[in-house]
Length: 315
Image (cartoon, rainbow, N blue to C red; front, side, top):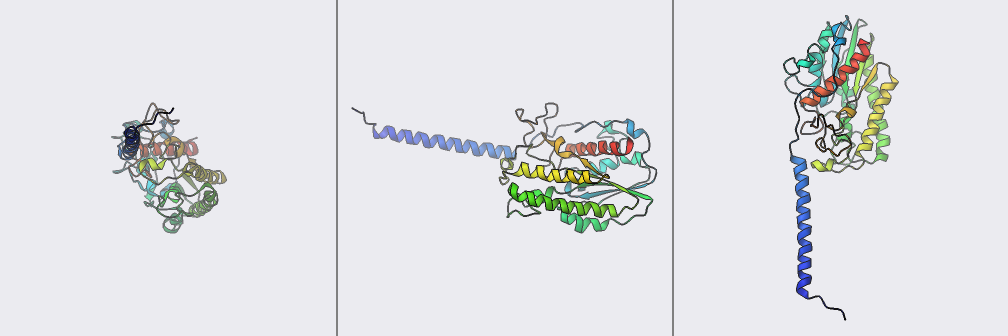
């Protein structure tokens, strides 16, 4: 004969289950808020790859060089105040901040260097065509152009899922949508590249950066209080593939792989079990808004650009 469970025992089981659910929910929400709001260590010292001093011991080019910064807030310098953004460091190293990079800048190898940065925060690729390209004059044959470009990142992350995704604000889109939209992005970037090259009949080199991933390849922007985007890693990879295709298409357009170098320095930088964890530098290279680098991130980007310039000009 089955023994009936007394009513008050059932009541305590229900209360216990509800209590555990509340504890779990509060704990999960607390972890989410902690992960979103905690300040990750930026670290100290040089960031990114080493740059050899030898190539900077001789002049690269004696002719007039105009050095242009074109694109979004990364090139404009958000996160790198006081001359510590990658563009300014390329022009002139800060010897007090980075003594190891003394003499490794463009001012030393291009004696007739003129620099101008027209990049603007929050801008997308079409705005780089409409607003920035028109500011670059057409030079004569005696001038050589050197251009650093960051474009396409805002086409992916705007409008952070607050509105329906579209071709120039893809956040939240599916991979199927991205296949068409990234091809459209490639078309806009191609227009921008050709427009820049037309300004330099005497020749130019364009150094085009890939788009980095603050989630370190995990694809979980929701952990830092952004909208969930399941396809973000695949869409980002597709956009970077289009940038790489353009760099392969034109011999004077050179790929600067920021994406690979920044993996492991995003929101999971201090989690040793992650694939891209850097034991030697487990630190955060991003500004608080995540779409831009911090000071050490700018240092790393500067070094990546310089190493590619060494490959192009000094070898």
